[in-house]
Image 1: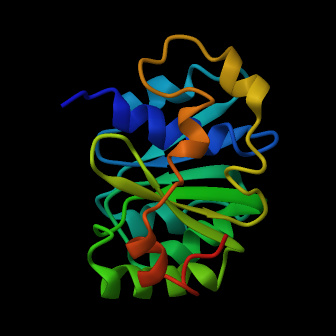
Image 2: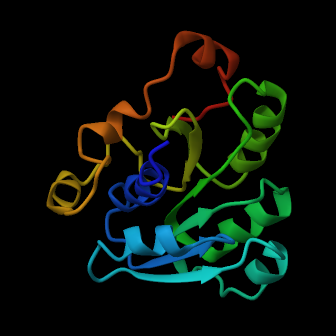
Image 3: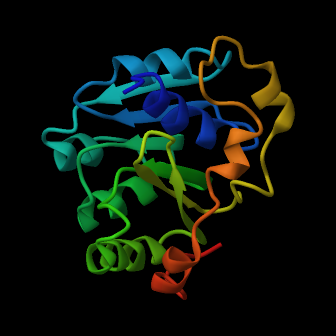
Length: 183
């Protein structure tokens, strides 16, 4: 499996969706690859906290201090609430979630996210998994910043064509999540 696909898709999808990201909070127990991808974007600062003990780490973050949160290792409702508090008014978050075939778990998670975010959309990473994008303002396909995506250098997978294509879902997924996915 290509190890570069996941970090590129976890980082570049939100950073090429947000209009002017400046602060990224990475919640991960293995943040090095994500930090490396954030560093490809000039003038964007990244802070990493451990996913182990995530609630304590998120509690210590200031209100509206991040534009983007990359959340690994939890789908806890309290973590989602803290992430929303930490995000600025136009912020967005990308997080891991149960496999799309686990409709019950994802429906519960997306209902929690719906309390804080206007847009909730799963997207294909390209390695057989999906991530979940939750946004307070920006739509990941309508608000794609093509210039930022095109000017990135060094990616092995992500590009401006992969970005919107990642959000294409088969009909069985659309039907299973009708009224739950918010796009």
